[in-house]
Image (spheres, rainbow, N blue to C red):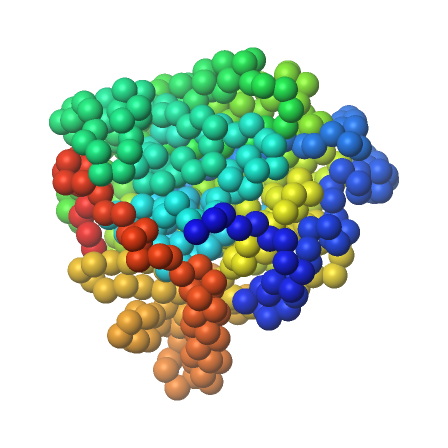
Length: 507
Ligand SMILES: [Zn+2]
């Protein structure tokens, strides 16, 4: 099946049933809008020292994903600790999306959704035995098709090429320190091929410190990159447990703690059951230290771009794949539930000529790729769930989507899905259908007090779920895979290694 990019004029957005604008008809190519935006920014916001890129020069793109970073632990999202000075500064000069929902609460499907703008049940990479099918069209593929040099640097297991994540990248390199994901292993990274360097991965992924390697890799790559526009994807892993940031970051938010927790041994949730509140506080402080450590390295990336003269030629987006639970709903970590702490992610955007803004309307992770392509004035991905927010950024007519969908495959406990509108969150088991709970997000943002079943809002929520199902059916028809490409189960060795890393403890 050939790759398809959107060229038809009558493609539909299945979610809203309205025609998708062809990219040639859109009226928000960022570069062409620069003069007006710059005038607005000068009048409205004062200090902007940037100069626009030449009007005929394509913008480059840097997309950063920070693993396990929940939005509400960043200062610019209201947190009381100074975890994120560099991201705060980026948000202050760019756009901060205040209310972003991930498609799920774990790494593999959310990155597949980030790359394809599809929900997990449609891109199909929704359990750890799955691989993102080659037929799926990714952000990197669209950019490479458009003449961009594409490069990715990743540092966590599920971003490995074995999961199909390297699609569209001219180069895609590991910054992980453990042998399973070493350069040697990557060279033998065909699906279902026995990886080299087994049995040394146990325990190493969670204790790996990778951010400096990403910075070094980017520094080298920027110097050696070919002429022309580029797409650089960076996956930062260190915020993912264990929480072992080097000092002074590791203990900076709880230096006086003398208890047994040191940010390690966190992949075994049973160990943490009944943990004392003070010890949990320290674990959270260690998590925050990892954020500060990672923020420090995000700052280095920003400095590298700016010092290379790329500031005015590059769209820079920082986001996350999912959040992290600290027993808000009885569990620790992620890949367990779909409550806010697991799926509310940050998204910060800086683009030449784009004035500072805060988007408070609810948006979704699947909106990121369509928005970035729109900002670059490139063709959109074919029929997807996400949609460009560029009209919103340009203060044009725009309506938030009706709901945001999150999904979670749980092989033992039963699958979960959630729908979020501005007013409520519906939690359910999709098949067989079992309504779990409904929460009033206006009164109960923490999603702790379920609305009674006889409340009329239940009828609205159930009807919205029905519409969501119809939307998924339409997407499914548009993205049906050939039988031969479905799944792509991992080989036994890979499964064993992932199990050793604590990744196959299916819920
Ligand atoms: Zn993750």
